[in-house]
Image 1 (cartoon, rainbow, N blue to C red):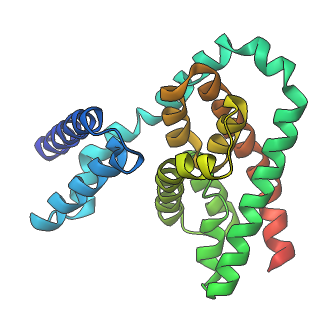
Image 2: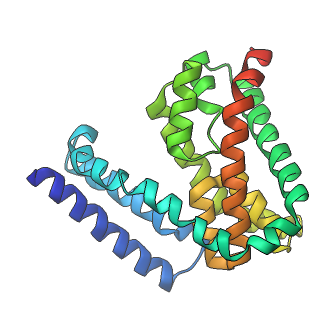
Amino acid sequence: MIIGVIAILITVLVYIGSRAFYRRFSYPFTLPLLVGTIILITIMLLLEIPYETYYIGGRWLELLLGPAVVALAYPLYRQLDLLKKYFFPIVISVSVGAIVGIISGLMLARIVGVQEEFIFSLVPKSVTTPVAMDVALIMGGIPPLAAVLVMVAGIGGVVMAPYIYKWIKVKDEIGRGIGTGCASHAIGTAKALESSEKEGATSSVAMTLSAVIVSLIGPMIVYLFI
């Protein structure tokens, strides 16, 4: 009980500090999630705290992940008319994005020559953590590894997205939202909401649709390639 409370307090304090740092130095690579994760890992390594011990409190925070994701539906509701107007372009774009995400991950894994368990854990890397862990488990992957890869994809996408959009000159809010939601799920959606409600709403839709598409066709694509 005490260990769990201490873990929660440390996590919350690190996040508050990281967020204050981000407000002062607002760059993609100073995101609170990225900086906070690095600080927490450093603390655990220096104090030799096993992950299992930290997770006693961490799992309580994890329980809040579900309601936090559901809360993303509010901006989606406020932009409902816009989403109806661009329904088919959004569905087609997200479908292409989800399929490309799966195939590109598989091709990279084949080139590197990793084991099948890693491949099965890699496929759902671009969807939310609860969905990714279930998909990985069904295909024979390792759910905790899938959760780590989801986090890497989310943070990596958020850090690189501004530079990529600038490089390929993507300025449209809907296009940026779809790209972010497909590649960086809830982490990217939270960042997209900082840009605008329209970008955040389309990112939320892309994240949800991508989760459904990856869950349905991900296993089929994997078995075609392996």
